[in-house]
Amino acid sequence: MSDTQKTYALFALVAVLILGTGFVQSWNTALFILNMGLISAIMSLGVNLQWGIAGLLNVGIMGFVALGGLATVLVSMEPVPDAWEAGGPRILMGLAVGTISIVALVLSYTKLPKGWVRAIGTIVVAVIGFYVTRSVLDPAVQAVEGVNPALTGYLGGLGLPVLISWPVGGLFAAAAAWVIGKTALGLRSDYLAIATLGISEIIIAVLKNEDWMTRGVKNVIGIPRPVPYEVDLQADPSFVERATSFGLDPMTASTIYVKLGYAVLFAIVLIVLLWLSQMALKSPWGRMMRAIRDNETAARAMGKNVTARHLQVFILGSAICGIAGAMMTTMDSQLTPSSYQPLRFTFLIWVMVIVGGSGNNLGSILGGFLVWFLWVQVEPLGAALMDIITSPMAEDSALRDHLVKSAAYMRLLTMGIFLLVMLRFSPKGLIPEK
Image 1 (cartoon, rainbow, N blue to C red):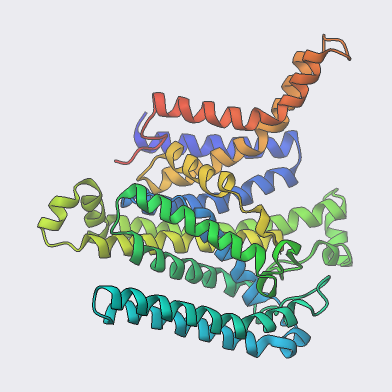
Image 2 (cartoon, rainbow, N blue to C red; image 1 turned 45 degrees about the vertical axis):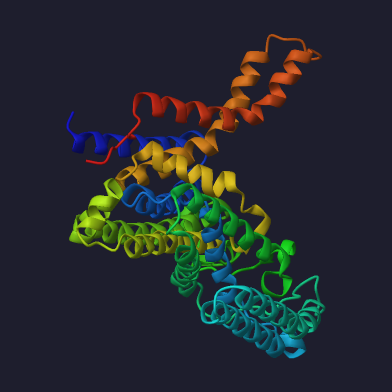
């Protein structure tokens, strides 16, 4: 079997798994797997750009995805007039003062002569900037968060179409990647991993605690959607008539229609990003990035600015993750900061890239679909398997009770075994880099 035939066969297998889910379980479940598979494939594409093409170890994917989710709130939610009146301008002033303080801190460190003068001057500027910023920001934050906290308690957004938030989410993630890259890309790969992980945790902590911006752990719900609401479709006589003519319940038909709409939008984004990634990979820039990945010393000897090129690809990959984060929050129609966990939004994405084939864009996309399918289906299949195994046992059997309760861990066990098997028998992934 040629490489092309193998690629077609693997994608056909994924299609069969998703279609089989529709026939055996439900089409709502199948479309959910498809949509989240599309989003996961986009995240994998961004990580593959960083690791597979450039060899950059980013374990802070979760933070960039969360910034994409934040963009949907700041762009598409309606502003809260009472909150803006209570403290909106003062919050903006506080943020401006904080920015000025950071600039002053950087200038004091770079301009003052080395030694105790620089140390004391930097500390003084940092302390003054901190207290001035907090003195302006804290009263405004308290005023905003006190405005009907059960329903709002935050400033809201700009009230723009939600699709605009997808590229804005990419810009937010790119800006964070630039800050991280300027400080950490000159370090060894393990230090870069520590820096990205730490900063991603800081981003999540900010989203959880800054209620004036994201409502914190109270979550932002009702984020606008680019597709119709199910209740609106169910109230539309023409839609109900069409659904009935196909022999479908209008409620089920409405959810399928909405998920199909999301699938079309997500597929368009994935195809565009894949095409751009493939063009970049085949260009002189892509060949240069692989040369830098394989031998930095030789690339530097040829006059290539390795750090600048790493910064470029780090920003691009993070921006793709930010776009995927905005898409996911749009589909969920809510921002839940506590749901951003490293296991789901960092480890699992890395598994997708490794299983699919590091350095191969099609491989990373395949890994996104396949690993997400396993992640969703293994737990219910594990519970069914445990029921079969324990069916001959007595109802009050301690072993039966233990096995049934352990079914929830089948997902983690299966993913670990699957990854180990892949690394043993296909270390370069299902579709390796050529």
